[in-house]
Length: 147
Image (tube, rainbow, N blue to C red; front, side):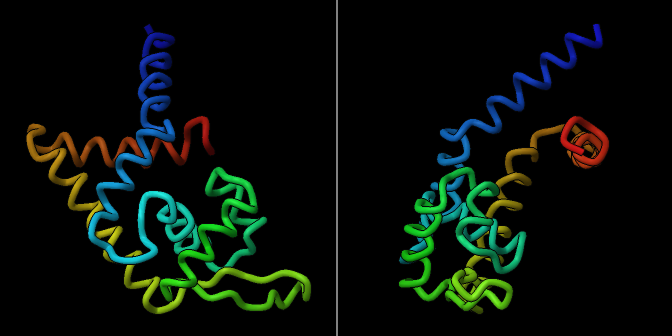
């Protein structure tokens, strides 16, 4: 029985983590956000907001693409005024990608859109189930196979 639950969770995570699933969600969230923000650049923008200034090489594993892919996406975000490149104080050869104020505002809007989308999708659940799910998901992340 327990193994069945493990398989069920693993299958659900596989669907949730698929690149196509994420791209579809990112496309929906970024619609109408303006130049530079789309399903392709969203992961870089979001990761920078989560981690703070990073080099393209350091950000690449978090985003799931190679350094050159991060660099191309960062160039689009920079052209749109959402990030800047600054010298890395620890490595004179490297540059850090840093969110601008406009970038921070874009991330705040994207996070609000995501929260609203999630809330709407859970609105048909019986009272208390969404809260219990949120609690259990946080616990799963803290204590489960990802910790």
